[in-house]
Length: 259
Length: 114
Image (cartoon, rainbow over all chains, first blue to last red):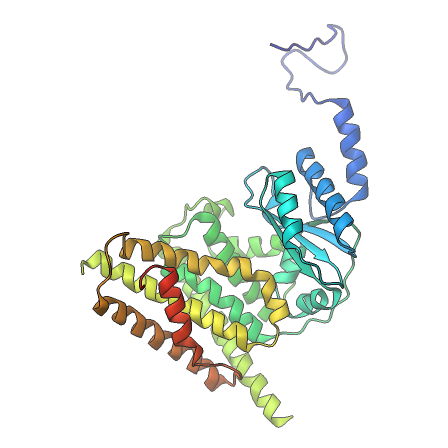
């Protein structure tokens, strides 16, 4: 067994104190890695993940001329319970990303999801699609970014996204906790967007807790919901959201005819 | 058909119709570049439909023609109703002719039909 000796006469550390032991070198290395990256709404991240992020950036930079590389999604959540690493590559050129994805997966031994997007589409998405601001509300980026956007509502995009959340109504017993959380989060993002409210993962989680009367968001993720009460509220919000979207589509097409 | 099997078939029908509506709306919206980013997530519907498909039609137990027709017709009817609702709202470019082709493709993928 490894042992660490501490001097008997020391200031501050009384016998029985809990301590955290970590190598000094790793701490210094982590700080130098952290300096290069930009963190949005991320309090802390495991050193191993930072290493992965840096290695991925290095490989992508070699293959793709990009304006930024942004890491999003479950990989950034605490712990190692993520499905894959979602990466947005902001580039105005078109690349075949499949071989790069393959190379990254072989080297990192984790599932990679690469999304190639140009600046114009990204800005379009941020102004019209509530899932974009939600996606970027918590991320790690190679370069600092600030987006100035004018919010517009595209009811047809919202209609399409809302359809996904219909799955939960029919398949409550089949879906796992994470799938239920994803579908609920999707619906609430659309619900807030229609009210022209600000959207971020934190705001959505807070709203979910209020609407569904949950103490912790893990109640959904760990599949600990009361089916009847959850579904009743879920259906109500779903129908209300769909009604608003349909009204919007109708008004938009009337407006189009007038124009 | 047992009651449990009937329920599974209804769930399968619901999922596949939703998936078809989603696919056809996707091709009707001229914001495909924007939507394509989430393709990974919309796969869920197909995954769940396949799960039901496996339960309805276990390997080596062929589904009767009568059952296949029932499922196919019901999916077409549901998807059509959803899409027609949207056409009446003012949606353009919705191609109802795509429904049958998409249904047949998914039924094959879910191993409901040959």
